Image (cartoon, rainbow, N blue to C red; front, side, top):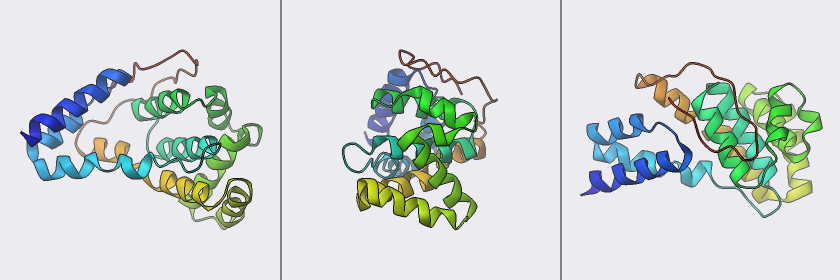
Length: 179
């Protein structure tokens, strides 16, 4: 029964975002325990902090996922951020090397990149996030920076890696992230 519910949830997520969830179905078929564990990761990666700081979260998750992937997982982040009300053009600016032009999205993006690289600039950026939005926003950015690359790395480790693809930054876009 647990495996059935895990598969149902995975398929529902896949349909919602037009995203290939075969890797999740494979995990569920190998181990119910592993399937349950991966189902809890969104509790970390989707912690967005306070209202008004979604851009910081989105930028950090985008940077972390970009560090691990350039295809379906990154498109999924674009789609989820857009669904949360983030202007996808801000993510595009980050991808094009213009995070300074992307407001809070760029701030989260720069923070995650610095944290991943072990750059001391992460401290200054975390302080800026905290000043603007509070400690919960800084926590959300840290969670996003740490967790965004889990999925693409896990997918590649399970043999579900995908080729890079062009990202769709249209606000009305939702889906087409095939893996």
